[in-house]
Image 1 (cartoon, helix red, strand yellow):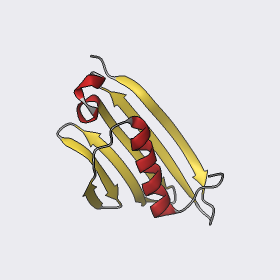
Image 2 (cartoon, rainbow, N blue to C red):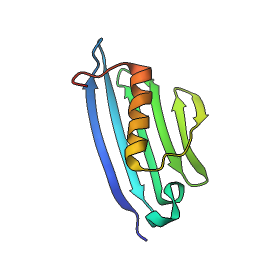
Image 3 (cartoon, helix red, strand yellow):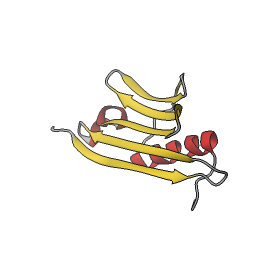
Image 4 (cartoon, one colour):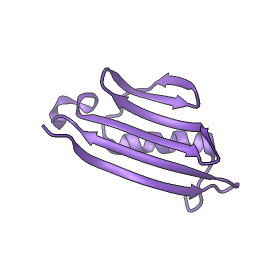
Length: 105
């Protein structure tokens, strides 16, 4: 199966208490869905401070490494999401915990 781009977004959001966060999300379907989430998708979801890019939250999954979270330079294993919607909710939760609420949310 040829990789299929299913999510591609790049946006900057203002934070309720000042500052901003830039979010880049890319997700590819690389296998058939029936094989399970861990074998189906390769993704990188990152939120970072555009003035201090080392301040970041990153959730990714790639060859030989299931879904995991990076907060700045620290890395944490995550429970594998079962759907893209669950992955996006997880990412949003981690971004809000680290950066705070975004305007309009």
